[in-house]
Amino acid sequence: MTTRKPASDELQPKDFEFNDDNLLKAKNIISNYPPGKQASAIMPLLDIAQRQHAGWLPIAAINYVADMIDVNRIRAYEVATFYTMYNLAPVGKNVIQVCTTTPCKLRGSDNILSMCKEILNVDLGKTSSDGNYTLLEVECLGACVNAPVIWVGDDYYEDLDEKSLKIILNEIKAGNIKC
Image 1 (cartoon, one colour):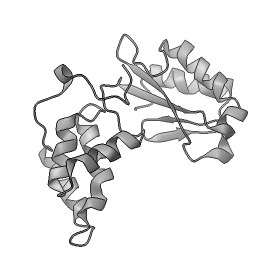
Image 2 (cartoon, helix red, strand yellow; image 1 turned 180 degrees about the horizontal axis):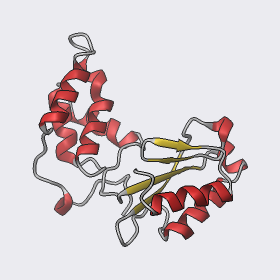
Image 3 (cartoon, rainbow, N blue to C red; image 1 turned 30 degrees about the horizontal axis):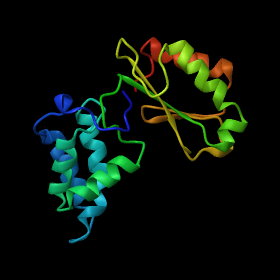
Image 4 (spheres, rainbow, N blue to C red; image 1 turned 45 degrees about the horizontal axis):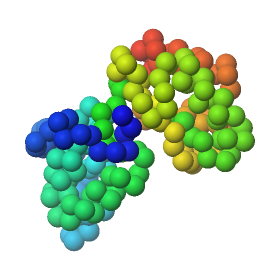
């Protein structure tokens, strides 16, 4: 299952709401925007919802965020489906995103991607059978000067080569890097 297509209906929860801590975070974020401009909070609110819901955004969460900031639901869907930072289906415990845009490709991202597949035993766009890893290809992580780049959890790993990637992936497998 890829993360860019919404999860099947049977995986979608019927409802969603922020827990107390996340509701407080959301209200604090919304308060940073002037009246009538709360729609600008959509991206960080979707991120909070995704983090609360095991790393992916169900439709109920997208609706909840849209309703919270008085945005048409279709606008929230547009944001959630456009940006690769949002996963629309369940993901593994560790999400590894490999940039394959031209600068990364010229500096070896194809090899980086192949090594990720082999070491983590997961196909591109899929989650491993043990549920530990999801491997994604993304366009431009914005660190072109330090290509090739992967994004793991909230961290970028840049200037990768075979040696450094093996160390990073082994640290992820050992649980020393939290995604």
